[in-house]
Length: 257
Image (tube, rainbow, N blue to C red):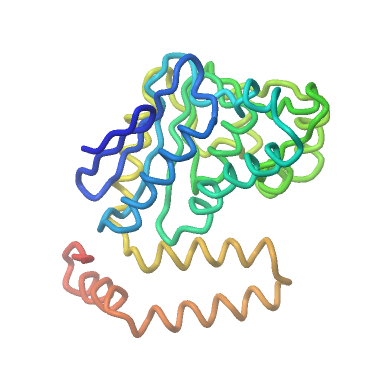
């Protein structure tokens, strides 16, 4: 178990659980940003297969950027803060290992941007998600305008961002912003169960699935298909695919290192 003042993390069964605790609402100020980076340092140096992010504050996953910090910032301060905030989010989205956000309560602004940077999102009924930056005369600045349309489509993303409205967990699940909709109080449990399932799969295959999904968003269909063919052929000659194929033929569970 490792701890910072506002972020703690522990690893069990090859799942690293990262806990956010910066009262009152997990505002994404510099202490939380720095804590997330240290947790990601540990994750990247470990043999953990999946990372799960949860909140230890009732009613909040993370309520957004640090408005108090922004309110007294110069233009350069603001630019520097945005650059620092993007670092852990980009590290999450580019990781070769999957991550899961377990959402209970509010995930707003930078908090939703953090959740969207994860590979998957599990959310409890009663939660609220949104990007309210236009209420402040701003726009989402940590990937919100880029990741949201990739998840829900351009029209829905415009509706959510332009109106700055809260999206219910039920609607978020319906439009693809949440991948799993669960009962209140169970998001962490369900996220960990999902992580256990992912840990039982080939890590190499999971990585290539995520990269293929990136290709699908960025490349033409022909280019994406070509990349897919290259990736599956490379996997076939690797040890995990060979173990998976032999396990299937021998009617046993595969043992992925």
